[in-house]
Image (tube, rainbow, N blue to C red; front, top):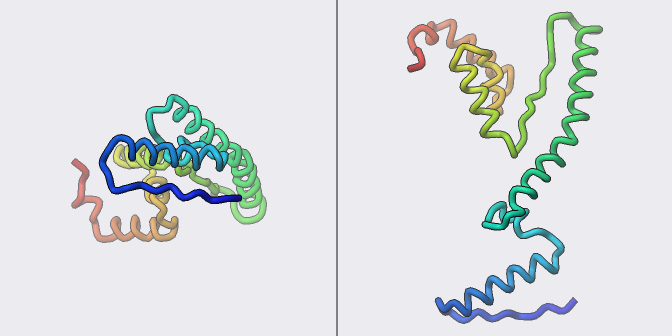
Length: 146
């Protein structure tokens, strides 16, 4: 494969900008990749289609995760002790901020703090120790949310 040199003189002219844009577009066209998928934005109407397509591809793995989670819960119930459940957060790079905000709002309203703490990538053991420490020193009574 031959490589061509593209020279860009130091210029602020529209012509040099157009040549740079042409070079970038040519790179993506020859590589067979979508510029929208790599840059993640732009005014191209296909941006949303690519974003949701990637989310749908990511959702395929959740079928296997659900099966694994179900098997682990069956194993725990059968061999360890009843009353425990194993849960894997339904979190990915595509819904991370939204998922954490939902968990934070729920924890603020008195729901499970552990779900929020583990959603922000804290280990369950560390989260449990933090909650116990807060309760032991009475921090829960002193620090009330607004």
